[in-house]
Length: 138
Image 1 (cartoon, rainbow, N blue to C red):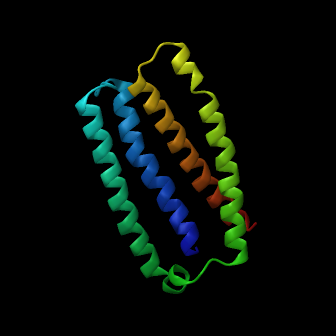
Image 2 (cartoon, helix red, strand yellow):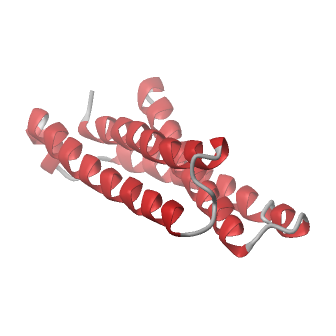
């Protein structure tokens, strides 16, 4: 498995884990969408995400030292560009659906959470598309 495929797996799993905790707490009602507890949980999830990304990418780079430091070849650049193109359409779809929470009278903080959910879904879509394309050998 190449370093960039490992990096895509790391992104998929860590984003799913960290923001799964955050949005799971919001959905189950353990933390309300308003106020300091939700902000503190969000900051903690982002901090854990950053630390996990750094540590796991360092480990992945150490296990494949040639791939970790080498520039991306044409195939890897093509895969990353196609995945980001797919992510663009996911982000635009999520952005266009933001009028729904506004229409139903949600607060500005809740709309910001919906926008954050769109960014998280886009990140998951890009990482998933990269993994699929690396596996298929595109």
